[in-house]
Image 1 (cartoon, one colour):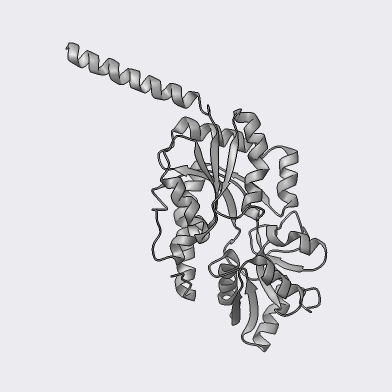
Image 2 (image 1 turned 60 degrees about the vertical axis):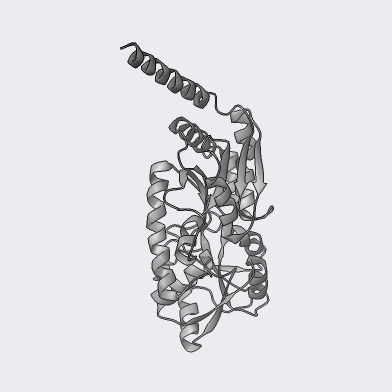
Length: 320
């Protein structure tokens, strides 16, 4: 009896210690890994909330850029870290496109992460150059039917723009020649210069050029219009139904993150996303505030993987 009572007391003490540790979170600096270079849209997403979260948490939120392999280098580092709340990742929607196009991943997407909260998304937009004649989707489709194989630029293979291009072709019954570039900048430069007629590009990477009149937005490949260009209709409004290809930016952690820490991060991030100054910064960068919590986020992941896999197989999109 005494042995059993002692074991119960010992177990209770361990649980109390764990609860106290979680309750004290955070009591030291937190790493926030970013799988893309400094200065890009993903890095920008991390820095929007860096200072406000440091104020709320009373600890430094240290951004570590670990670019490469479609954010898999950073993701692998995260899943190998202890689930104690001191290693987080500013994760993009590559989390759900990578399983569709890579034969092998250094982690299990469904089991090795704790989805926490989606911060915001940035719609994929169909752009043309300022000297092109196209003003709407119908005119692009008509031109593509007159000129089978018309070029369409994207920032690379298996990007949101590539997926949008493939779905656009299938939905409109047209044939385009996909021209992948090494990043958005050279792709947008060739569209601006008239060397390629159209591109599907993330708004956050093109918003400055569009505001300057160097790119013309034709359609938003998302369920709703963007506050940045409220007069630009969606693809669906123009008669072409494709799934939402908007890249999103989120917080994830290693699997097994304690629920009290999840709840704290979600509460604080969702609270910040209601602040007018933060909403303004996100919308000015071409984003739409999301705030989707853990349950919805977790359900989204397998759903998006399935859709991306279907598109990738149909279009033979793969990265060796």
